[in-house]
Amino acid sequence: MSAEDKIENKAENLGGKVKEGVGKVTDDKGLKSEGKADQASSKIKDAFETAKDKVEELGEDAKAGFNKLKDEITGDDK
Image (cartoon, rainbow, N blue to C red):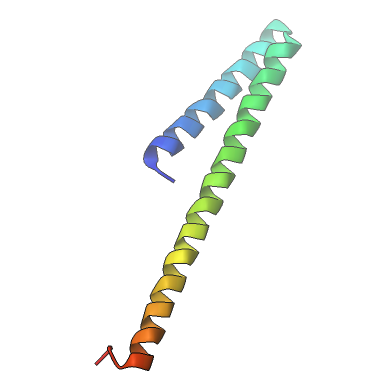
């Protein structure tokens, strides 16, 4: 996950907390719900980005393993 994505998700989460708090103070159920939704959205985005990073890492590990095996078979590692 890029630093920019992390900052955007943190900002969305913080904004959601502010909205929820203002909604509680003003007894605005819609604003409170919108704040909770913003927080949930940021958590989902974080989870998706983390999963995407893990898949990329697995792909890189698989490629490195394949190349190592290929080099061993072809004798290119010597």
